[in-house]
Image 1 (spheres, one colour):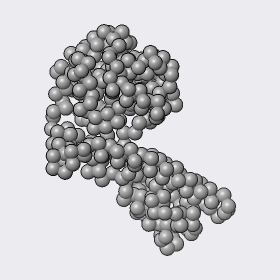
Image 2: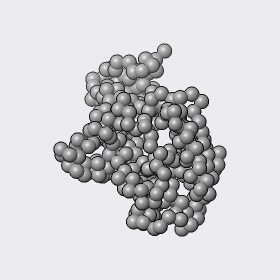
Image 3: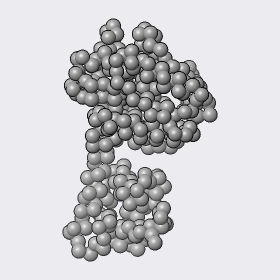
Image 4: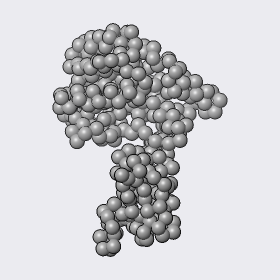
Length: 333
């Protein structure tokens, strides 16, 4: 066990205060070999006797770099030194692009967790990652939902929860911890590749903002994401209730043509923020994908439109048409 440090105490307190983990949980820690995941793994293993956890380490080899196999071997060796079970998956072909790598990584991590009946998948995302994600999504035009991304927990399946215990810890803190504990950090050259937008943001934009505007910009952005998380959760709850009301109104009127119809009267007096969220939920269920802002606005325009107004086609050829007091969804051919 490593010497007890202030970071041990902070993470221990965070887990208890936020009720992220429970005694006796089965935990699978995703470890890349970088400083954040090594810090997480070492602290979780040190806290294990207090919580009676069952802990294992998982590593994903994307085959991005020539040294990826050596990287995986180093993580496996460290897990052995820590007497911790180790699992690994290797991509059959080298993955191109951050999105493809992320999708594959979470898929195989989930498979490994479920095969070992682990209830929690832990990742080393930090306060710094949260700040970068907020800024990245802001630049891309995301709404509040995108800006509050990287929450403390989210469900991957009925049996598995993704948990991020380090969201109040900065990348500087994890680096200092690894140095103090003499942990062998594996340097990932792909993190320096400025072809990736996230790397340019981390290496160029955030340092510029810290130097020219505010030295605590990363901490402030992460705090904003935390505040938005609670706001978004409340708005989503209210919007879901509004949508259910608009759909249930058809039961009171036999003239409703189909179960997909929305009652405009239920939506008209609601705040604009709730109208948009309710319509986004509605469109997502119809389109089987996240709708764009333009698509939500196209449907929103029908709330107060003249009778018999219809929208331009949505993806797949579907249209929405007003037959007061209903907005009907008509699937394409």
